Amino acid sequence: MAQPHFKNPIVRWIDYRLPVFSFMHHELHEYPTPKNLNYWWNFGSLAGIVLVVMIVTGIVLAMHYTAHVDYAFDSVERIMRDVNYGWLIRYIHVNGASMFFILVFIHIFRGLYYGSYKAPREILWILGVVILLLMMATSFMGYVLPWGQMSFWGATVITNLFSAVPLIGDDIVLWLWGGFSVDNPTLNRFYSLHYLLPFVIVGVVVLHILALHRFGSNNPIGIDAKGPQDSIPFHPYYTVKDYFGLGVFLLIFAGFVFFDPNFFGEPDNYIEANPLVTPAHIVPEWYFLPFYAILRAVPDIWFIDAKLAGVIAMFGSIILLFFVPWLDRSPVRSARFRPIYKQFFWVLLLDCIVLGWVGKNSPDAVFHGIPFLWIGRVATAYYFLHFLVILPLIGIFERPKPLPMSISEPVLKGGGQVSTGAHAKPMEKA
Amino acid sequence: MAQHSGAGTTTAGHASGGHGPADHGPDNGDVSRRDFLYLATAAVGAIGVASIVWPFVDQMNPAADTLALSTTEIDLAQVEVGQSITVTWRGKPVFVRRRTEQEIAEARDVPIEDLPDPQPDEARVQEAEWLIVVGVCTHLGCIPLGQKPGDPRGDYGGWLCPCHGSHYDTSGRIRKGPAPENLPVPEYAFDGTLVRIG
Image (cartoon, rainbow over all chains, first blue to last red; front, side):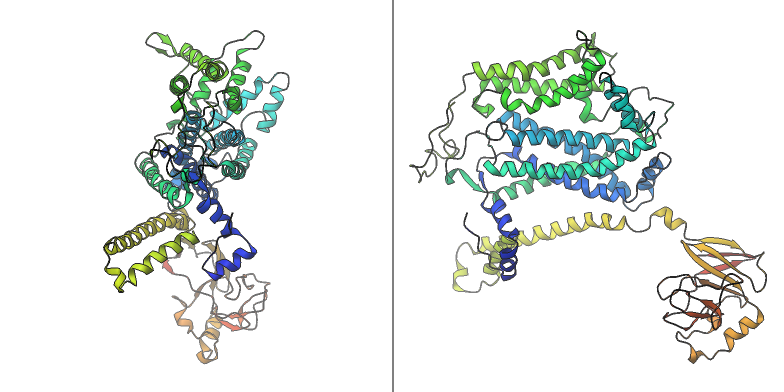
């Protein structure tokens, strides 16, 4: 890669000693990006921006928050009422968590649709699943901090999941709590970890981007760039596109913050935690609902009781994502050229929404004569069926549509100016 | 970013420095329109950034409940002549001394020109008997001694700061030592035997 020439002598002086400007130039300006990325490719950078927003607002909230069972709830109320703009900063943080999950879920389904997890991007995908797991841990512990009723009982329920582990389950739970119930020691360690984990996420995001920049972005067609005619520099083309997407996203984000800040929240969490009274209907935050539905759906299986089976299924539903690059046998990345997979993709998306809807409802509730328990069981079974059976089978039996010669070809007739015809690789095998 | 702003500057330079013959070309209008859009975008962006940065700066200012604690009311009925009490106001000590006739006289007899921070005693009290000052040394923030009966009061019968040896007189004025100013007088108001500070 040619060394960029900087006009500013100070920049030159610094760059000679500390090549940060060369690095930025290389990773943003020269970084070749497929020229056909659509708006579904905005969500990675948006998620990164929200991560920064969460860290900035979180550090500010930590300046005013007191991690003690006697003061936590009141300190949050003080943030809402007395701290200058505390209401704004807390509502940004609270809604930011929901925004983060929306963006990341879209980002994940983008990857599933366009086959972004396929070789050589398996590690990129795996790091993404690691980020998802870290986000779930972080958001769960963050939700405990205001010490409302849902905080307390959510913490109780989720930590009790570990009691399902055979033999040592109860000891694990005791260790997690640091006592005999969710109490002050639990709150303190959750606060400490809630502060730590976002920085761990930043670390994994750096690796995620490092892995991304090794081979560059996948694209809606899913074939590799054949040469310079298929790519454009990231800056300014995609910085501008990302800026536009950011503007749209911030409008939606601000809409929630200013006009319906408790849209995603549970009113019960504005009641201070009471270890002697459980709210009538405990639900986790919306982004956990599909997993919550899986947890409750699983019955006794052979010698495994329903409690342990549910926990295994819930964690399994995420662990499964690590293996997606190898469960999908098709060499074609993009669902645009996979007529069968494309349909099952939408069924999976619908299935996840159904799981979320089931998780929102009480397990005893009935929908038009069908108990939610059974809807949840069918949806859970389908989720695993998709990844473990359907996905591998489609890879074997599906006949993909013919792939275009290059990224440019479908747009510019004749594949653009293929000046480097001799170097152009042959069409990828379908 | 360096490259980006560099490119922007080049474009701007081309347009604004444009009185040469080349600028009468057909695309001249497009270039200046682009300049306008650059500036307008930057201006809107700057306003947006400033308006979101301000809450994050202002959150560190005293909160509403902290400000609500910024007045203190005390009852002076128990304080005898010659006694001192210390009360807390905004987290800082306030010295309240019921001065003797001699102390008042000492404070008023000193020639104004001899003072490092010239201020007549009359300007520092509302009632001659009651001296109310913030008990924080104006040098580096230590609390001067002289409130308790056994304390050293310095060369001028007021207070002596143990940190760097600043001597204050019976009006709380600096007389000797490194402190630059007199002990400040807070806002206060008498209401019978009560005094409200702040």
